[in-house]
Image 1 (cartoon, rainbow, N blue to C red):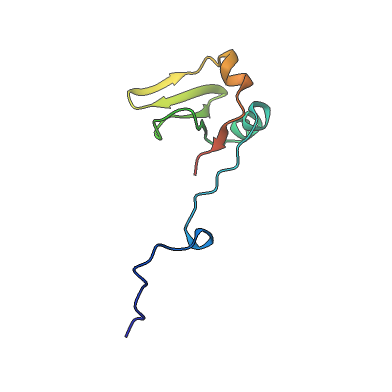
Image 2 (image 1 turned 180 degrees about the horizontal axis):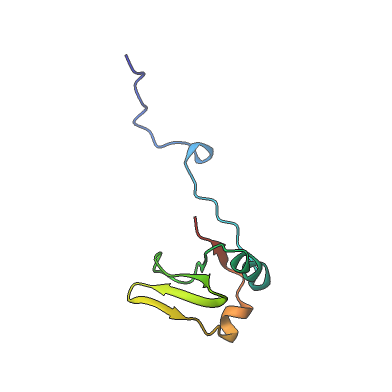
Length: 84
């Protein structure tokens, strides 16, 4: 017989949390060059991410894959995360 779960909300330390380590642009770029997919927390679409394909930086979006021309805002951002 399974133990009963409390109807009270879990304490803060018991809640499952998704930990994302934010990276600066140059750290994220190093990850990208090593074959890891990266994205920004600012991008609300979880299906948008950057990756390398045949030495070309690409951006995967809902409407397909595109060559990615990095903007100054991308380079100054510190909200990069690795896509798992």
